[in-house]
Length: 73
Image (cartoon, rainbow, N blue to C red; front, side, top):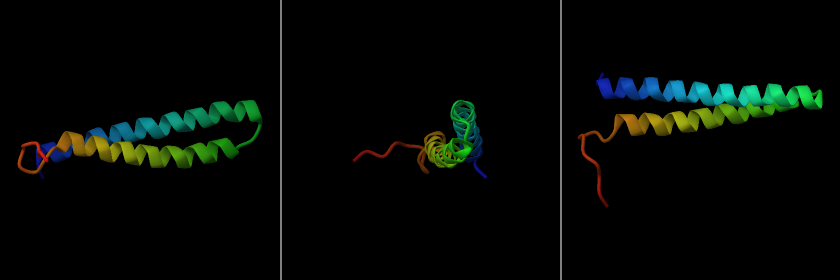
């Protein structure tokens, strides 16, 4: 396993966890205002998707290209 791949996986996982935690926190805050648990479920699902998406982007950015050089069009 390449150290850059490991660093990318760790960075992507941390960022993804922070994003999903933020969305769950927003859902819990909204839950207190509307007296319904639906916002928690909706924002948890949205946070899971957003966390996964941002985690993949960060993983790719940290890992970089396979040959260590940027690709130019």
